[in-house]
Amino acid sequence: QRPLRFRTDAFLQLHFAGAFEADGKIAVDYVRYEDAAVFWALADGRRLSVTDTETWIPGGRLHRGWIDPARQTFTSAPLWDGDCEFPRTSRVVGGRHRHTWLRSEVVIGGAICSQISRMDLDGTLRHHTLSRGQLCSEPVLAGEGTVMSLVYDSVASRSHLLLLDSGTLQVQARVHLSQAIPQTFHGGWLPAR
Image 1 (cartoon, rainbow, N blue to C red):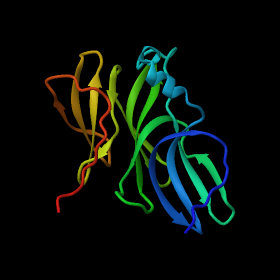
Image 2: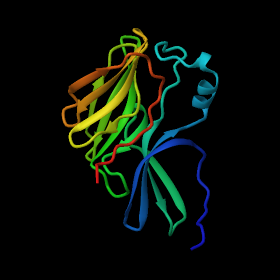
Image 3: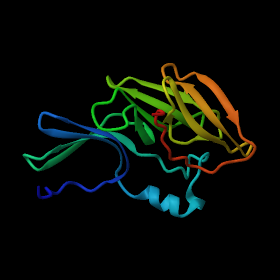
């Protein structure tokens, strides 16, 4: 088959959550940015802050895009208006997924706080909010019932591996490391064969 090409409004996308087919269309869940401001912040770390709300660059928004090959259109709408990135799903390969896991941020009492967030298929959100100055990396599913994230504690200048119950988002364990590990942590876990 020949590639199908058509025009749509410009936006920036860094990470996909997943995709599935429905009614002759392709649904794509992804984190969308309206412009490239995040690249300027990443290129010049002096403008990137994890604690200062004045210089903080908000994250993207979780969207669902619909590709309609018959009409040659792409439409997109937000699934959540929270600042987020690094989406992961409970499925390794295509198909509808029950949960989307995200690293997200929220401002509490003037401080930016990092969160592990889970969006369920019905749109319900759950969050595990970290302490001020702790920055989590992307959530990674580690077997049945556990989600983990590498956490950098900017106050103590140390890191730990955070293990959460994937149903309740309650802490199962913290594995404290002997040194700080830089952000971020891209990775995946597959069951033993």
